[in-house]
Image 1 (cartoon, one colour):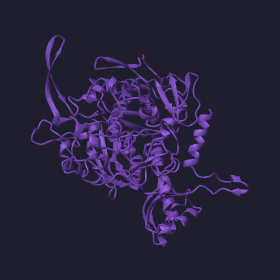
Image 2 (tube, helix red, strand yellow):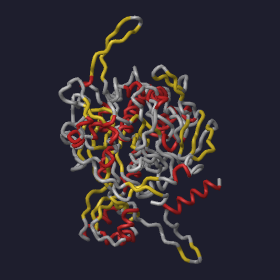
Image 3 (spheres, helix red, strand yellow):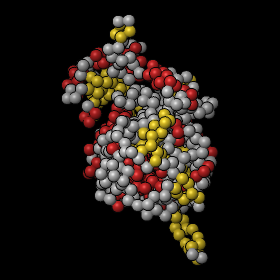
Image 4 (cartoon, one colour):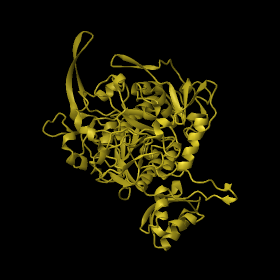
Amino acid sequence: MRLRVAAALLVIGVFSFPAVNHARNGVPKQKPSKLDRVLRKAADDGDSSAQRVIVRTRLGRTSAVADRLRKHGDLVESEHHRLHSFTATVHGNDLRALEADPDVQGLSVDAIIAAFGGTKDDAEASAQPENLLITALGLTGTAYDGDKVGIAVIDSGLEKSGDLDGGRADRFFDFTADGRAAHPYDDYGHGTHVATLIGGEGNDSERDVQYIANGRSQKARIADYRGIAPKAHVISLKVLDANGAGYTSSVLRAIEFAIENRDKLDIDVINLSLGHPVYESPDTDPLVRAVEDATRAGIIVVASAGNYGKNQETGEVGYAGITSPGNAPSAITVGAMDMHETADRSDDTVPSYSSRGPAWYSGLAKPDLVAPGHRLVAVGAYGSTLYQHYADRRVTGRDAKRARYFRLSGTSMAAAVTSGVVALMVEANDKAFQAPLTPNAVKAILEFTALPLYATDPLTQGAGGLNGGGAVKLAEQIDPARPVGDWWLTGPLTPWTFIGGQSFVWSQTVVWGNTVVWGSTVLQNHLAWGQTVVWGSTVVWGSTVVWGSTDLVWDNPAVWSQTVVWGSGLLDTSDERNVLGPNTVVWGSLAP
């Protein structure tokens, strides 16, 4: 216990600001700053250059504060009314005045967002063969394909192809412009890859295969590069430009659009294969607040953990590289897993680039799980930056003369694969029951059915590796309409999954905040699975829950406190210095 308290105090000392009204020797301590880490440094340095900021106001005062800034000559870009915020470009020397405004509750930098797909390891090995992804996830022969499930992919856009041709009422909205419906395009290529990992039909990779069944030779047609949920419909919300970068404010607009058009566009899931460094507490981070808002609205949010798991100069693995919004408590935060080109789950590992936990400021255990994300193949966007600049990652399909597909690695790909599995879970549950699964219930099922990786700590793998077959199996047996406290499992349960002829046992644990919960947790309807409950908060559990005695973060802080990854500015988030620019990752001691 002393170790936990000491470690907790250490983090409070490093990352928090002095508490209000606490005094020492009769001198009041300074009030917590309303500025995030980036803006606080700009104000301290006397930087007078223009600053793009997201201003959060008191309830009902957003328009008044925005009007005052306009009169002062500042440019108000957009309003985020669900967050009681707006984006503006202000004079740098006015930051302290804004901080002192009683109507202003917080100011955050409108940080650059970037994609988490594309590492230099992509060119070092061949692509996955014969739809290995489907086999390794235990989804061979599944009865579900994501039919009628909507997934909002907030990314760089979408280039239509035979694999994702819009025949399922797919929609496209451009938030690098005015957010209106537009003709689909993807000038970077990341969004197309993510979207087709989720829902690509694999038409251009189909081939005939022979196999023996019941003693007779049979013929079948398979698609090597089929997505996880080929009949899900994709709603593409473009926020990243041709360089794979965009503004946080664009993502906020896209998330708000998804929430407000959820029923009209049938949006069940949001995929966020992007992020930025953590600059403030999740309580004030606009991206985190937007994710929690979407979760409360009933949308399942899947987010990348980030690609900052190692020192890019030395290859040394470090901890605490989780990015925003992967640090959102209720998000399903996904790290990457390397299948080593086999369906055998016993040889799975977490690649060094995948961000480890815990999350900065909050100290939450993240990621929630890991999923296949290494050297994955999906549709390449012909006119995109990635496709044009990285010819060695192109992969041919049926047409050997023109490579239809493209190979990428990263936690972006892992999040996409997880979103595809979530679509299958939603479909399976919807076909069996009337009430929908809540985002918290989906997250719990994914953790409970995960397959733990050998000799890998929880801050690296979360609950374990994604088990698609197990998650879908459990989702189709849970009745969300059962009252709180009731057993909501409607059929027999065997907590293992057969993959490639081998039996793999589920984790049967849920990481609630920092604490492991195990037993029959997911098999009973608890308050914790409620739609409005923030993951990890204090809730009343039933008597069947057994709480673990281990705090995943603080019992052994030495695991991560010596070598951590942090950013001194814009972190390189794609292809490890080869796509987005110079490396700015800073390694060292606990302090940023």
